[in-house]
Length: 156
Image (cartoon, rainbow, N blue to C red):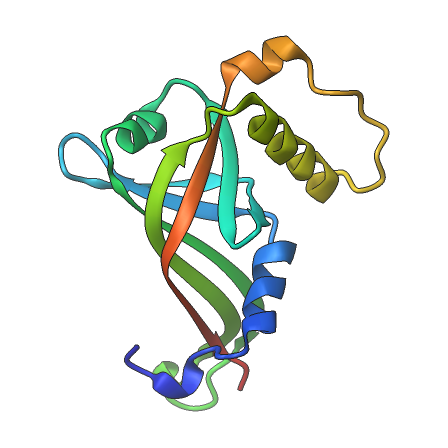
């Protein structure tokens, strides 16, 4: 990290940001060698990142091919206007960057656990029905194993 004084070292802060953020960004490398990034809903659970997807599409094809993945979440806090030179403008934020490997979850039981966990995260008040077998069959669940995790912040 170029600015080591901005590294988030507190693991509880990192876990909290991963637990509370609603949108993450998943990057893969496509067949042509280009990085591709997509916003996704996700669940941070048991030290891994999980997301759901259609069973078809570019990110799933990339994962099936063994593409390395990168996953990012951020928490914008405040824009700091410049007082004097424009280069003095800044932004207060926190961000987490994960580098890892992704696989498709095949276990029916685990897929169901993850999809239920996603529902609990995004609709904690409940009020939704169970996950139908038809939906379970046509939904891919991706598991990202964390190989490298860094956090960075600028809080002023």
